[in-house]
Image 1 (tube, rainbow, N blue to C red):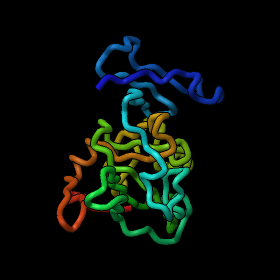
Image 2: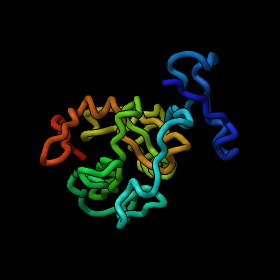
Image 3: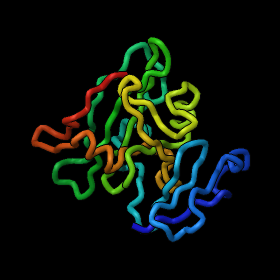
Length: 194
């Protein structure tokens, strides 16, 4: 897939000073820009865009998330998949919900679109990125700490066309062995530690 550059004027002026271009040749295979440690790889305009109907009707469809996302709780939610659409729908989305520990005894749930067309592991929308930065789960190096800090994963900024969604991409789906069966989707290799 050809990636298109995301220019500085796409962000508020207060953040443009934090954008560093890693590659000066925009025709190279891995064009990336860093926004406070999160790389951005926007998709071509021909990419299928996320839309409110991709999310269940009882969710916040305008913000592409569950109503309890981004609200701190005393206990984590049980990680689980949500399939939006029926088995015979023309258009179905696989969504995944999980909590991140943000402080001792405090957890914040996040929802992700599982998108094997997204080439990297994890993408976060602006609001999710700010929450994770504020609680130090997302470091200045652009890595998010997973599984009780046993694992680090590079975190990318969600493409503007998919904002404000969080996305699990192909590399994470492969790493955690995403599987679909008659019982629904599962991550066969996901060992959750908050």
